[in-house]
Amino acid sequence: MDGRKAIIFKQIGAKIAYYRTLRGLHQVDLANKIGVSKSVLSRIERGKYNNNISVSLLLDIADGLQIDMAMLVTFNEQEKQMWWNELKD
Image (cartoon, rainbow, N blue to C red; front, top):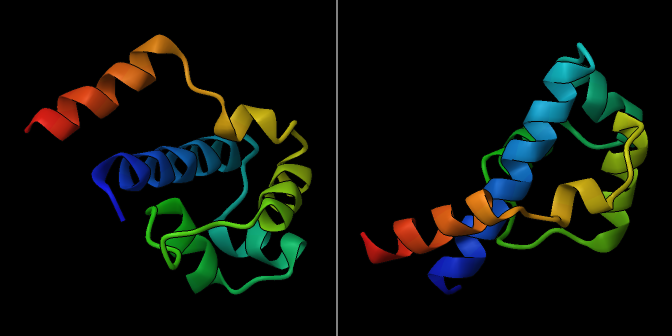
């Protein structure tokens, strides 16, 4: 997997962790809501879930967090700049 994709998966995972924390949920709570194990959710949040996340799983996560899926996969300019900075290093 190329570096850019790895960074995007990490950012998606970070957004999931952010919104989960904002909602006052522990990993196990969200995992139970969406029907996955805590270890699967942990790997997703770290950007290490088989280097891929299905749209179906993203929809389940977004529903569990009560947010629009677009919030997980849309990045502002500051977030995009982080990709380029990390790729340069």
